[in-house]
Length: 90
Image (cartoon, rainbow, N blue to C red; front, side):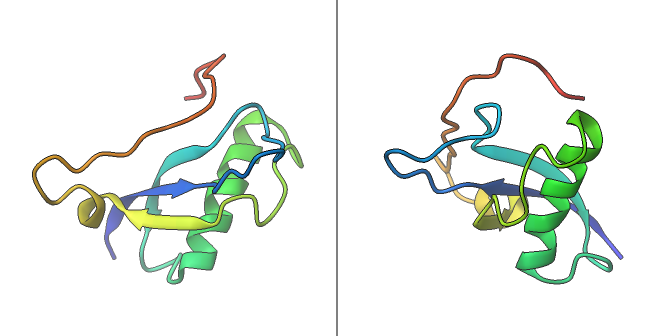
């Protein structure tokens, strides 16, 4: 079992609606529990809803999952977050 940070993102197309402006979440994942990309994407939705309120973010909201270890492993790797951050959710 290892806990690894994952970046989950929503691919945004013109006209898409966002939940509270959220386009990405960094989440710690227990790789013994969330063993597939689909489970990791759903864990991000579930945790967001646990903090903000049940049912705020729908299932299948996010569509891309990358381990932070694999995402930022070369010089100049970066991720860009779109949307506004009106409140910090801890």
